[in-house]
Image 1: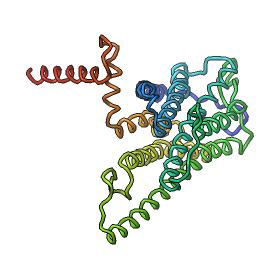
Image 2 (image 1 turned 120 degrees about the vertical axis):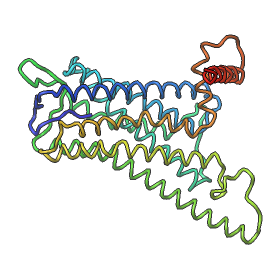
Image 3 (image 1 turned 45 degrees about the vertical axis):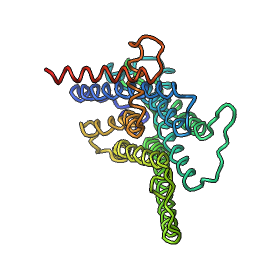
Length: 349
């Protein structure tokens, strides 16, 4: 998230719209609380099942971590910043906050990229063997975090504590006039949105094309031989139901990412290249803030496509109130019984 800047080397100290600030604080508060609760809960469920971690769950686990980085180091600092109006802290903290804010954007984005590329390899190159070491090192995940850590480094040199008015300091960026701001926004848009989206769209198109070809070939063979598909097949190109479900989930995650972030980068580019852009309007503010909703949507999407995980999530939340050392199945049964009891009571009133 970038403060409004003019074309000079110093920030422009604009008067604050208090009603707009209250709206921004309210939206950020809802986004922060939702993202923190949803991703932390799902992360705990996945951690409890770490011994049965599938490849897809590993990606989702790290996507949850990336979304928590967005919640605690992008949304939360921005929320505090909006409440105090000025950035409160030394120059080092200013640089660290701006670094972590972009780190969250990078990590969440590139975790979706490596997840999509992994599904592409699974469908289009099924014979490729992914190396798994004894430490369960996941190379694509490490690459995503590495790109995020390195790609966020320019923030440390661009942002600093700046005197925006006599005796008043804030955390702002200094750009070379007149092309510095435009270059910065364009670069951020390119590496965090355009290139990742191009990659995932390419992979999804290739996946759909491979499924279409495979489905056609199987239908041709079926018409000649007359043998039914195996019972475990889903009916889509003979792939297993589990693989089809993960592919559908990946598509939804990508679509939600595009829907959330496309308006954000659109208004950022508009404000950078058009000096007359309506930067201090409700529409601009809401479009930029709603981008962080992507971190709330990702755990919901995974829970939606994982039939057993919502039940395990409820079990986890209730577990501290349960006594004894019963199994997870017994705990889930008790939670289900409590739910039915509450339901019967409510229906009898």
